[in-house]
Amino acid sequence: MAKLQRGEGEGGDLEKLRKGIAESYDESTGAWEELFGEYIHRGFYDTPSAAPGAAPLTALDHRRAQLRMIDEALAFAGVSEDPEKKPKKILDVGCGIGGDTLCLAKKYGAQCIGINLSPVQVKRAQELAQAEGLADKVSFEEADALNQPFPDGQFDLVWSLESGEHMPDKEKFFSEMARVAAPGATIILVTWCHRDLSPDEESLRPDEMKLLNKISDAHLLPAWCSAADYASFAKSLKLEDIRRADWSENVAPFWSAAVQSGMTWRGIISLLKSGWKTIKTALAVSLLIEGYNKKVIKYNIITCRKPK
Ligand code: SAH
Figure 1: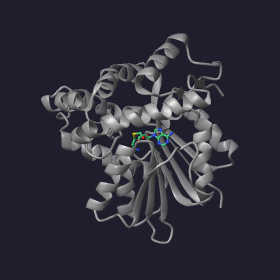
Figure 2: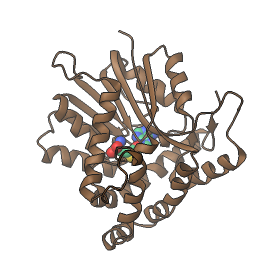
Figure 3: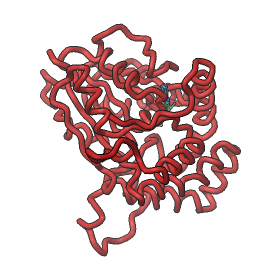
Figure 4: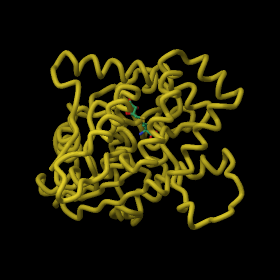
């Protein structure tokens, strides 16, 4: 297994990283919500080749695509809608302002908890839950995904959409998700990874590492691993029914949506209002796009089940 793990190894650095991530989301979440609504993740689209010459996508299409991402992930993992088997207790790890958490609570009528590092996001998520009349079903708290404040074996569905990127220790992150999962629970991780290595490679090429290092610095992404690495963590934790897929093509249209909305007057004003950290991250989106275009970064789903 070859991993790119860099940067924030020591305790003090970890604290600095957590603080940096919290502050960055405290600052940027208002702008993101204004531009894309309550989901801080990409949308799922039919692959570009499936719809040649299609009309340009509207903001509403992008929002639908974000919602579709949730349904596609649940379907990929085979989460049951059967009233007997559907998840009753769900954990959303790195929950943003709780868009997914609320959606899952409504879909399954489940009790849901969302955790993340940003107090501003937690507060906003609580407001949205209140506004949707879901405050008795859903709760949010500030907690570290690497050290979760829950006993073992609590949740029937452990969900993480686009938060794994920020985790400095991918193995610990994944093992915490597995620890809090109940026997028979499903674990769903949708995350950016670096590409899988071929059997004759021990690491990424130097030019690929250089690009990832630049992206890491700009976007507070302290470590990278591949989807194959996650699958091997799952295997070593004796998890079952391990599935994975590369959805990079399915999220491709979202990049231009992000760039286009950032370049409208409304986008520019929201960015300016939110502050320097957000502007810096927005300016570095081109590096991420380069990573995807060069196929160094992949958008992956990894799912598995905890044995009964
Ligand atoms: N899953 C959400 C938000 C994705 S944004 C959605 O799809 O809408 C990434 C989220 O990960 C942010 O909420 C950030 O606070 C959270 N996060 C990053 N590092 C974390 C950590 N170590 N522990 C808990 N949450 C973390």
